[in-house]
Amino acid sequence: MQIVRYYQSVSRKTILVVILLISGHTFSQLYYAKKGNLHFYVDLKKDSVHAEVFSCNSYNFVYKKSDEVLHTKNNRDTIFEAKLNQILKIRNTYYLLYKFKASDRTRKIELQIARFDNRDYFRKDAYARTKRLQLYRAADSLSGSDKLIRIDLNSIKEINTSIPFTDYVTKVNHVFDSLKQTIMYLKDPKAVQFYLMMDSLPTMDSTAIYDLLSKTQYRFFYERFLIQQVAFNKPEILINYIDKNPTNKRLILKTIRDHINSNAIIEKINETRLNTKGKRQIVKLNKEKRRLNALAGVLYVTIIMAELALLTLIVVLIAK
Image (cartoon, rainbow, N blue to C red; front, side, top):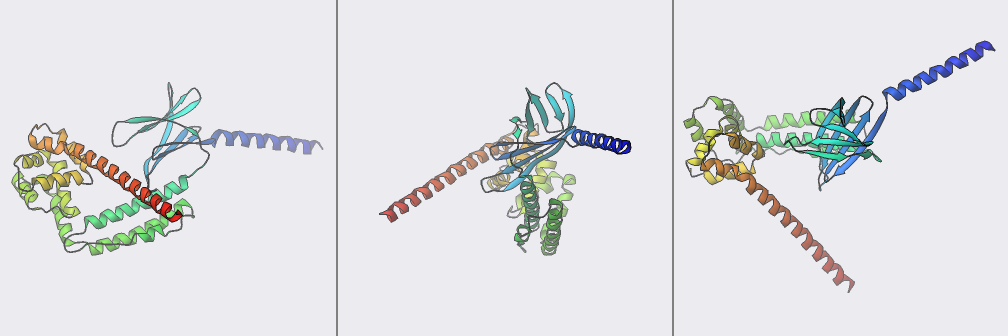
């Protein structure tokens, strides 16, 4: 009887120790916030935090904006910190101090306990979209006058999303590798030669670069890549070329404005010490781009409102 009581006592103590260990090391609470098209998920643990930020636009396109592990930092209100993000605790309320990658701007986000966990959906959709975008850009960058590469990206969309995330990533990567091989097989040799020439651009003299800028048509990705490389490696030459008022000046300014990396290109130009008309014309493209984007947004809303008005009219006519 005493032996039974002894083992019961030991058993209770063991269970208590296990519970204490579990509660001390696996404590986790998921917090959530939504601001505009941004979804913030913060998995708060005892000694670290996993913060994920997803962007979901009006077309339900999901992109992962941030994925960071924060560690303990006892500094006033800051209890966790990493390179981009911080977790603050103010009057028993948790806040995420979120830093935008493209600028020094930060945003203070109040967090609430999550009622739903959509991270699995967001993670899968964001990963698949990133890989599809990489394939699209690879096809675009290696296309040219001889070959316009077209590939079917629906094969990634058709992958079963109900499987675990690691299995999903494996399947996406398998399809991605197969399509990448197809792109490499269909590549335009002219594009490859152009990229090889761009590798030697840092050592080219200004005359050779001026000649390239004047003769390039800027129709294909690899041709527009020239603008980026000159801006990144020799921005003064690009400014001086615009100052010369060449015949393709308007084409180059439009190429910079519409370039996928236009912000980075204009930033490099703005960093130079030159103060010329050409530099001001390039830097001013940022305002022009914002104006065109705003105009496009107004036009989009106008079209939607017109379609709704037309639909309402049709309904009224049918009702009569």
